[in-house]
Image (tube, rainbow, N blue to C red; front, side, top):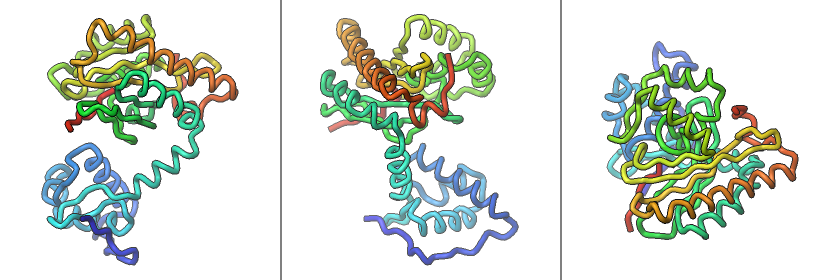
Length: 287
């Protein structure tokens, strides 16, 4: 069981740290917790950040008081419910989410695989909406997860449709290797992006999460610009050569249905339209 902090808890400000620095550190902690182990201790976070355990503890107390983290009976921390409330508020305001949801449900039903809707952000590609496969062995996409540009079908598809100078800027940064199949050589990635643009979709196996295959297809707005992507993911063992063409057609059909609905509304599509202007076993999905 988790217990959230009392709303009137007001930890003292860290000595020598400005309010803006404290906010920056708190947000960095949340990022670490979102992309790491579900339950983490003060010592682990202190090692990961290079900050003292006292600083980390004070930040966690503040975040706990506002519902952003929660503490279990072993005194380890996990994300609280407040981020879910914020994510829900964003999604409710996103026209893209409302337009896409029926097509995502239909795609999941017709294929039996997990589905995710993604859009670009400054830090990578974010999962806006998901539908999990009903099968016991499945990929599981988490709303709010940020996928790197260079690894996985969704990330590479979005990067393929970025303006060239933006893609080049991404490829000048250090590129993390997530699995033995992650491509980190910039020239090889450029070749992948060129092929993706030519064929109009991305397909990867095990680049972001071991054993997970994914197909991603762009969603276009009325200007013909990519505003989002629809991805289908699951165990690579089910994305066989004979099944792949049919799965691709289903993803293309879903992406086209969303594009048609956006065209009907004359919309540049909510969250993504503001951000993109480019020509009993579970597996964590890498889209």
